Image (cartoon, rainbow, N blue to C red):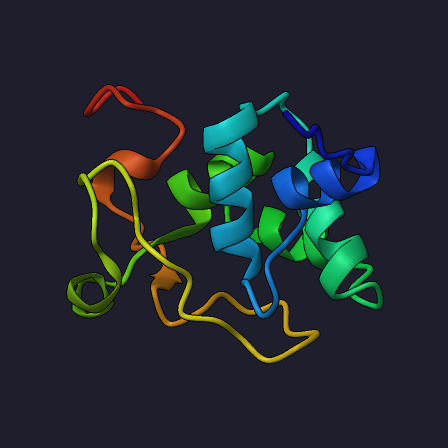
Length: 131
């Protein structure tokens, strides 16, 4: 039996690295699903360091869109574009599918995502007529 040695940094890069041309929303969703959210921008920052190091205001821009941490990126800032879902989806409804890719250095989401549509229940106060 032959054991192969793998460089630990290669294992980390395989598990936590952004795929080539993977958008920030797909990457962060994949990392949150795999490793959970700690209430910070840990995965957004990791993606930025790997794919768009000059995007120093990325977290601020995502915050303006309604997200305050990694897991809120797909909960408040972006939602699946229904027209793209049929193209990208190949698994259970809980999984979104494969990233439709962006150009190198872009901080925009791929065509799988659109800005979240603000609904009547998205406000701070959830009780009707009491605000």
